[in-house]
Image 1 (spheres, helix red, strand yellow):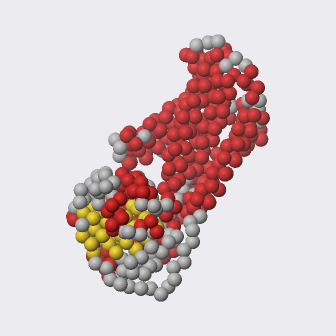
Image 2: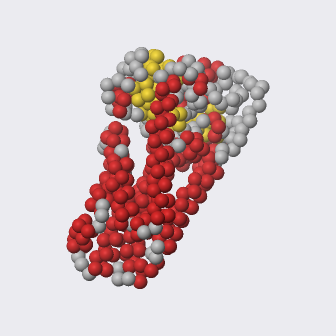
Image 3: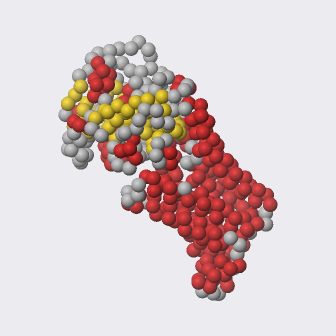
Length: 460
C-alpha cells in the first residue's frame, strides 16, 4: 500500500447540505404505479370477473384474466422505467430505475406466461377438451392470438437472456439488440388485448383509457429517447478533441463542442456515447465524466475490456460524437455530511476523480481509497497528487483481487484503520459489481447507514 502525502488547506466557505429527496420521489412513483394497477383490477371486477369463479374452470380463467391484465400493465411500466424521462431519472436515479426495471421485467414475463397457462387450462376445463385441442381452437377462432403467442415467446427470450449467467455469455451489443424486440412483442400483443380481452372489447371507456396509457408511454419514449438526444446533439455538435493515455490500456478522450457550459452536467454523472466512425454509430456505451464538466471540454476515461473499448482507444481527433445524457445521481447533491469517503476499484475511479472537484471541503474532509491490482492500473496519478497537495487524502491500495472481509485491502479491519470515522461520513463507491456488493456489506458492519452509501450500478 502506498499513500500520497496530504497538505493542510482550509476554505472559509461554509458547506450547506440538504438531505436527499430521492426516497420521497421513489415513493411518489410507486403510489402512481399502484394506483393505476388498482384501476386495472377494478376493471376486472366491474366486468364480472368475480362471477367467472362460479363456472367450470372459472378459477383458472379468473387467474388467467388477472395475470394477463396485471402482466400487460407491468410491461407498460417496464417501458416507462427506462424511457429516460428527465424528471424521473433526475430524482429517482438511473441505478434505482435499472433495478426496478430488472425485477419488474421478470415479474411481467412471469405474469404473462401464467396468463397463457391459466387461460388455456381454464378454457380446456370449461369446454372439456384436451390442451392441444384448446390451443388449436384459440389459434383458429380467436383474433390475434397467434401474434400474442409470438409476442410472449419474445418476452420469454428477453427474460432468459437477462439472467446474469446468460448475460455474461452475450456481448453488450447483442444483449441490447435482443432487447429491442420488446417493442415488437408489445405491438404483437396489443391487438390481442383489444380484440379478445373482455375488459376492453365491450367497454369503450376502458378501451380509450388503455389506448391512452399506451400512447402516453410510447410518447414518452419518443420524446426522451429520440427527440431529446436529437435536439441535444444538434445544438452541441460534439467532436473528439484529443485521446490521451492514462495508464496501460486506459485512455482519456477529450470531447469538445458548442455551448458546453449549457449542458447542465454535474461531476459524477455519465452519458451514453456513440462515436460515429465505422459501426460505432449503432452502439451506445455508458461512460462517466472523469473530470468536472467545463466550457472547454468533456472528458471520459476508457479502459480496454474488449468489444468496442479497444476501438475507442484509437479514436482520431475530429471524430463526431453522439451523446445522450447527462444521467445519474452519483453527485455531490447526495452528500449530507461534511466528511466524505470515496472508494474506487479499477476504472471505477473515473466518476470519483470528477466528483472530488465538486466537493467543497477543508483539508482532511475527503479521503479517497483507490484499489487496483497492480501499479500499471493506476490512472490520474499526477492529478491526484495535485489534489492531495490541496487537501485530499489519497490511499493507493495495490494488490491481488478482492479477498474476504478480514484480509482484503478493503476489508473491515483495513477500512477501520484507513478511515477510523467512516461511520460518520458519506461514502461514495464505484467499481466492479463484486466489489460493490462486498463493500456495501462491510460498510454496514462498520456502522455506515444505507442512506449514507452512494453508488451507481451500471456497466462501463
